[in-house]
Image (cartoon, rainbow over all chains, first blue to last red; front, side, top):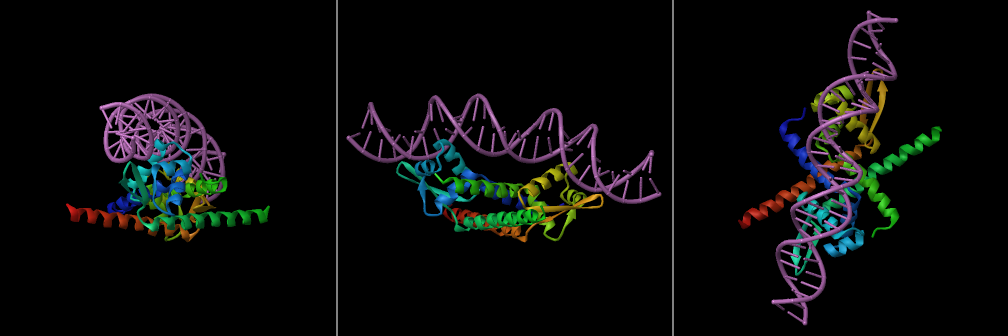
Length: 109
Length: 109
DNA sequence: ATACTATGTGAGTATATAATCACATAGTAA
DNA sequence: TTACTATGTGATTATATACTCACATAGTAT
């Protein structure tokens, strides 16, 4: 059983991973890698209701992935740290491994 | 709106991130980094019901994170690829940024 | 002031996830 | 064969998440 410090760390880390674990949120992160955007433009790009996008955005703010500030009527969201983009290569690494394994299975068939 | 290929990729990537986004599963991955283990030992280490651990394990297998094979009565689980461990530094990166920001806020108070 | 726009939030619903318990199965050992 | 152990799965429940709609708020513009 992991000690309580480690358990707390896993909890915090899981929050970050979970905040990334949704296709729509990944699309938002991918969109924001090119620069800050307002909710309106994000929603249009994603093709989902503004209210829904707004919730996803605030979830990612809570997880520490995004930052935001007001600019007139709009609220601008941005990646808090480019390190979030590292997740993409991590996830692709797992997927590539998956493909490799599937090929191995094919050989046997 | 991301094109359909990208949307499919985000979906697959999200599955991986989501498979990691649970404290118990992170604890399992952390435990397995030192080598393959049977369900029994994993469950004891984690301190949760074997049936529950079994479900978490098969979820991670589906996501392509873990592999498994039988060894007599036992089923041995292991990391499919060490690249999964890269996630930990990614998550820690986000958490460190979070702490840094909190310190900035403290200065202003 | 009124009208308008961007955003966020409450309420409700639908679906997904997590956990527990009981039981079935597969392999081991005697 | 019987008894035992490790694992996985069905059924259930509790909780969390995602989404939609309607509305409230904040700022802008006239």
